Image 1 (tube, rainbow, N blue to C red):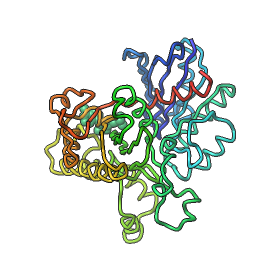
Image 2: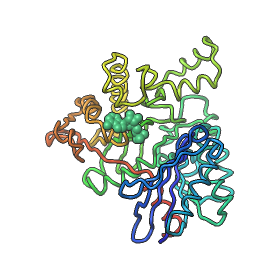
Image 3: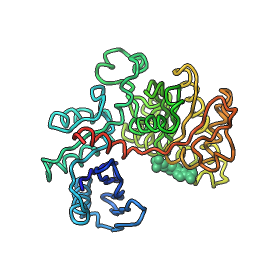
Amino acid sequence: MDTILVVNAGSSSLKFEIFATDGGLRKLAKGQMEGIGTAPQLRVKGAGGEILVDQNHSPGDVPDLPAAMRLVGAWLREKHEGRLVAVGHRVVHGGAEYERPVLIDDKVIRDLEKLVPLAPLHQENNLAPIRAVIERRPDLPQVACFDTSFHRGHSVVADHYAIPEHFFAEGVRRYGFHGLSYEYIAGRLREVAPDIAGGRVIVAHLGSGASLCALSNGRSVETTFGFTALDGIPMGTRCGQIDPGVLLYLLQQRGMAPREVQDLLYKESGLKGLSGMSNDVRALLASDSPQASLALEHFVYRIGLSAGALTAALGGLDAFVFTAGIGENSPDIRARIAATLSWLGAEVDVEKNAEQALLISTPASKVRLYVVPTDEELMIARHTLGLIGG
Ligand code: AMP
């Protein structure tokens, strides 16, 4: 049996999935190494959700991502039947150049290294496991799948900031992220709602990171993320759209160091910053604190505003799709967001929404509302298989 390993590396975690490639892609296992460098823990589940591994490691054994990758590789060699034929990686930034996934070679690595300044918190983490695999298995094909690629068809007008033009050439432009999720949803809509897939659709990827994407005939034409994954709607711990004057105030009047501002905007803002308690929507919904309510109301309000802007970009709206942790699991937040679309004639079906049905709008609704679970790892596995000629 031939298999593909899909890797999604974050700052302190390494998520992975293993797919069999014979007879179409079949998920065999899903795992993650969390607490890298602090309290490393490897957990792997089989296709049926059964626990295959639950191991704690010492921080000295797993100090960084390459060590985590080596440990996952060792586990694979020891416990996993099958022949690994390729590794597919989620890479946050493909810059303006990479419009589609690519087989990794030395030139690709050099290009992706140049993009580190554009995504300092993510790109290095994505490159580390790629290098770790090259060290051990230089022969093994590896594929980079970018979060930016799906948005590369945006108009040049949409991709600009109104600052002197030479910055655009330098790479200061709107890229957009969550592209693998949106690409998966666009494909899934063709299967589950073919009559709507060719229309004007907004997809709301609402997880710990969150953004909206405007799809016209299945292609991204606008999105809420821009130069970095800080822009757009508020997130678990990230601020979303903010007046750049606030940054000047923090730097000049408050005397904060750039690094402190970065930590504030990436790690201490969003739902966590506003509520003062948690970045988890479940905790905020369960709380009776006024700050928790304010955080959720602001989240919903900003999504409604952005949906209005994306509707303008599309020239109207046929459907709105909820996906990712919050979008797939919270009927309450979905209903509140649907209410911000009532001016467009959107009407949620309370029972269908509570049941997490695929279609959660009423028959009379002028905008169809869907819940479609996303699967970025499967998207990466498909691209990887495609590029190695499967
Ligand atoms: P993701 O990044 O897609 O895994 O989404 C993670 C986020 O989804 C968590 O931080 C929670 O806020 C949210 N989430 C997961 N389950 C629920 C739920 N049942 N109700 C509300 N929010 C949820």
